[in-house]
Length: 249
Image (cartoon, rainbow, N blue to C red; front, side, top):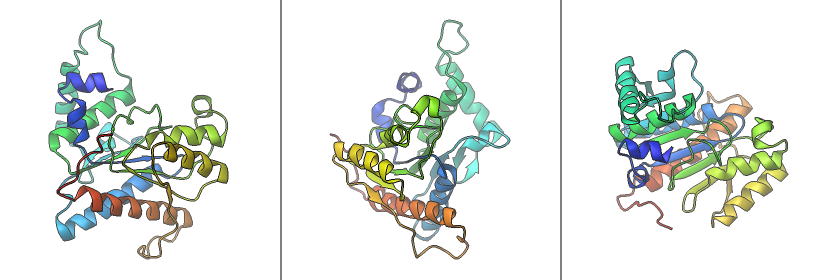
């Protein structure tokens, strides 16, 4: 991933300038990311920050464009095509001896390329699956990392236990970034807390917020929305500071 982005002119220093909220988990990743985007949009309407938001989620329902959004709107066909051919030509994918990214790798590359070009103030990223080895997990200095409810998923790739899967999900934690999660199985919390501690982080378990709007009635959605509210609030606090810089350690 990083080598492909370097070929497009996006080195790690450029990637470090992206203020990223990174979301992993088994259930509720997509809705949590959508809630984060909504909370940030509401904050922007009152304060002007963030001026521009990027949102990357998967999978799509009808078109690939839906996975890459600017200010909540999918890329237009023209903008998607422009970015696609910039990446295609920049990576030399028309040459037979060039390694071709797989579909999700290519879409993730496209998203970083577009968000950097558009100079988004905040980029919200949903992991495809896992976390530690997910293609979205290339940001060294996210502002916030958040893990939704963990269960058994992708067991052949991530391992057949909650502990193994939790280890993979916690791979998105980064030194200097907020580490958030929702109430989990005790063995999942133990693994998440251990991995956070290795990075000098204090894992925060987010309880259901009592300040959510009335439309959040479903218990599961209230959990996801509470995590999203905390993630967006943390992002607003840290990323809107003029002196904000990525952790250099």
